[in-house]
Structures are given as C-alpha cells and as structure tokens.
Amino acid sequence: MVCAACVFSVAQAQAQDTKIAIFDSQRVMRESVPAKAAEAKLKVEFQKRGEELENLAKKLKATAEKYEKDAPLLSEADRVIRQREITELDQTFKRKQRSYNEDVNQRQNEEIASLVERAQKVIKQIAEVEKIDLVLQDSVYHSARIDITDKVLKALSK
Image (cartoon, rainbow, N blue to C red; front, top):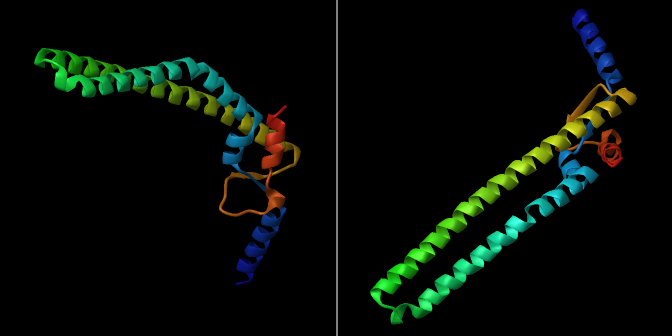
C-alpha cells in the first residue's frame, strides 16, 4: 500500500513537470497566411478551366432548351441528330467536369500537405523554445492558457 502511494506520488510529480500545449489545426488551415495564399493561387490556376466548364454548361443548357422548343416541329431524323448532339455535349461536359474536379482536389491536397509540413516545423520550433513536452492537435475543450494556435499563425505569417 505504501509502495503504491509512492509510485502514485512520483507519477503525479512527473505529470506536474510536464508542459502540454494544443493548437487548432482547422483554424491554421483557414486563417494562416500560407493557407490564404494557396487558396488564391489555386483560384488563379483553375479559373480558366472553370470558366470553360461554365460556358460548356451554358451551351448544353441552351442546346437542350432549343431542342425542347423545336422538337414538335422537327422530323424524326433531325430529332435523332439533335438528341445525339445533346448527348455528346453532356458526355463532354461530364468528362471535363470530372477531370477538373480531380485536378482541383489533387492540387488542394498538395497545398494542404505543404502547409501541414510547414505548420509541423513551426510547432516543433515553438515547442523547443518554450520547452513544451507534448503538443496536441485539436480538442473538445482546452484552456486558452495552453493554446499555441496564435503563435503558430504568427510564425507562419513570416
């Protein structure tokens, strides 16, 4: 019994010496200067393709509406030709949209990976300078006293 109390006392003393910090990764992803820069970079990078997709969608819609309006007056052969044209436009649109979405997702993932790597380096530097033993990412609740998110954001803005 006495031995158990001693072990508990030593463990408690060690825990009191342990310095813990936490940071909000979602906030870093939303508010950091590199995150905002990456978002702007991706917007510029994919703007032209996005506009092309929008134009193709408008063309598809206009073609389908014109067909609906003209369908009662068209011969069977003309209806088939126009339906085939709409189907081909729709397939082209879907293929380009899928490719666009895949490319955007891939680039976003690359930018996120780069930001995470930078954030981890900054967190490690902060932990070493402030002699923090343990840094946790995200939590349900934590005291503002142990939150280093603002320090991480400030360091990333340099």
